[in-house]
Structure formats: C-alpha cells, structure tokens
Image 1 (cartoon, helix red, strand yellow):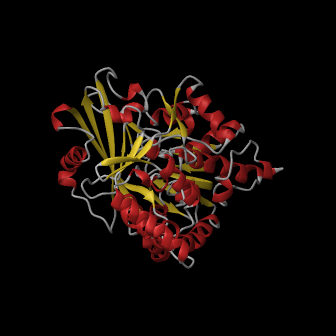
Image 2 (cartoon, helix red, strand yellow):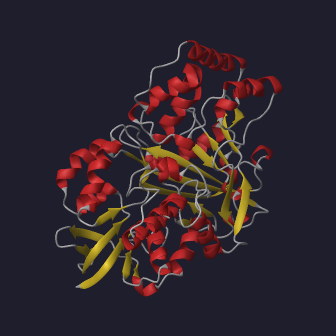
Image 3 (cartoon, one colour):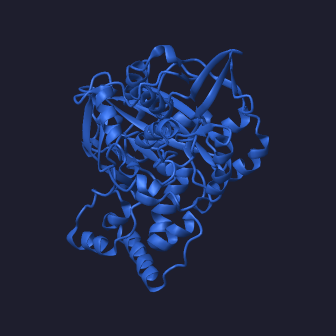
Length: 469
C-alpha cells in the first residue's frame, strides 16, 4: 500500500493550485490523482478533427489575486496571452442590446422600453419587501418590466432552474443592479453603456485554449508525484485509505478533494449526508456545441466577445465568438471563424440530445448569427454532468453540515464543485482555493476565498494576503 501525507484528488485548477503551492514551499510528500489523461478539469480544451480549438464553456480570465497573476505569467510567459476589452451583448427583439441590459434599455422597441420604465417607476413608488429568493430579488431590484423581458427568462435559461429556487448570497459582483440616473442619462444622450463588471478587460491564451494554461502548470510539476488515468472508487474515512479503480490502495494523512461533493459523499459511503446534500446541492449540466465556419464573421460580430440569448427561438443562453479570443482557435484565421454555444440542463429543464446540434444550428440562424448551415465545416459537442454549482435556497445550510463533517475526518473539499460556491468558482478563485488550503495545512493560515466570498471579490489581493500578518 502506498502511503502519502498529502493526497490530492483532481487535476483541475484547484488540485493543480494545491500541488503547485506544495512545490513552491519545497514540500515533496504529496501525490496528485486525476481520473482522465489530461490536466484542467472543466478548464480543459480540445482540438476537433478539423483543427478547431474548443473550451468547456466561455472561459475568460480576470483575477482578484497577485499570486494568481504571477502564476499565469510563469505558466505561459508574458507574451503567451491575448488581451481583450470585453464586448458582451444581449440579442433580443431582433437586435443587439449592449450588456448590462438594464443600463441599455434605450435600444429596445418603444413598447418594451415603456414597460421597463413603468416597472422602475412603480418600484420607486412601492419598494418591495426584503427578498427571500433570487426571483423576488429580481422583482425588487429591476422592476416588473426588466424582470419579465430579460432577467427571469435569461436566468432560467442559464441556471436551468426557476430563479425562485436560487438564493441571493452569490449575487455580489455577478449582477449589475439598477442605477436609474445612469439609465435615464443613457436614454437622453443615446449612450451605450458597456464597461460594467469585474471582467470588462480579460486575457486569454494565444495557443491551446484555456486548457493550455493548465497543461503547462501540470506538465511542469514533478511528474513522479502525479498519476493520470487514476480514478477513485472508494474512500474509507476512518482508515484514511483511498482505493483506485485499478484496485490499488493509498493511505493518506490529509486528503484534498476537488471532485463534486455529491460524488465525495457517494464514494466515502456517507449515505447519511445524502438527504441534506440533495436538498441543498443543486446543479445544472452543461452542453457545449462548437461550430467551425468558413469565411469571416459578419461585421456586427467582428469585435464581440460573447452574447446572451433570453428568448425561446434558440436553445442556448450564451454564445462566444471563440475565434475572436485567439486567432489560433481556428485552423486559419484568414478563412475560418468559430462560434461556441452553451445549453443548460437540469432536473427542471430537459434537453433533446438526439437533435441538439441541429437545434443549435437552427437557433443560430434564427438569431442571425449565421445565414445558413452551408458554411459550417465542423461541429463539436461536449456534455459535462456538473456544469454550474447552483446557489440554491438551502445550499448554505447543507454546506454548513457537510464541509465540517469531512474536515473532522481530515478531508478538505475545495474547488468549483468541491466547495459548491458559484461566487468563488472562477479559475482564479479555484486555483487560489488550492493555494490557500495548503497554507492552512502547512502554515496555519486562514483561508480567505473559501470562507469570505465578498472579501475575496472586493479587490486585488497582494501576496502574502494582508490579513495573514
């Protein structure tokens, strides 16, 4: 039986962050297990048989951490990045509206504009009570018009659950709220307001898609401490023994798990936790469809990054002009371009997988992204069961019982689905969860990202963290 003090499950950003920081500290008694044959987890990239690069969804990279920024330069070099000014848009009513939608309702047809303004005026006259869920928060924040026209239909398409099933803890910097003066100014002066948000500028790898980052990270770690193609079948929490699919057993002192919490509960045999887990740990699956296209994108798509689609004339909620992220995402940028579509799925929102690619292509025609399917030269699809960790109403209650239970057994669950906190599940958050956990285990430091999302997202954090001193 192999014995190791520190065992890590999963070579996505969180597991790699932990392994990377162990190495930075000069600690060598760790082992990283990954069930697949590549690094990256949900941040993996693929090349299809026509030479188009695809990500598992519309990843963009911006950061709240100096440590993460330095690591990204180490992985790809200063010259390994494309830098972009964000252009995100909403397609509805047969037109593009700049995002945030609520700041740009002047672009709507007069009937819809009036409905939005009437809803805002009514909200000012009769403010809503404190909301108990995200659906009520939408009504109380945006008024009935914006809620009906955009916020509620879009959020159902992206989350695959009714907004009333979500909490409001996650909102933070993720949603632009109402600034009535700004809205009216944009209407009067016919301004387009597109600069909001933490990711109004972002970077993307020149080569290899998002997965290129994590391939570089993993490839430069000590390879004798990494095992790919090593899925886990069972964990005995009392004996601290992990069993691989191959039958091999590994004994650990501390276990860092980045697999979905629901899966951790299953393979550790903790059926007693399953009722509260199922009550609070909602999630949606993600279907990613890529289409490689010959020629050049339409003029109105030349500089756009991603677009939101709230209406029911297409199955997707978001589309990325992926060839705009890097010219190397297509075989020849002079004669090819690409679109990447995201379709959500859950127990509350089904998907017809047998016809999904055709439905997506028809949706692309319906929304005027392409004129016909004749120029499509490549199609690619990927489904991940765990796509979005949904911040359900009962999530925090469930986490308050599940996370401490495992930590009392020296099992530390972190990452996008390991911690199940959407508000700290971007690449920077996930990587730093691994780094911070290692600092806690080795040096007794407090974790910031896992414990205080609002503080984690409040600014760019120096290294070492200021509250460690």
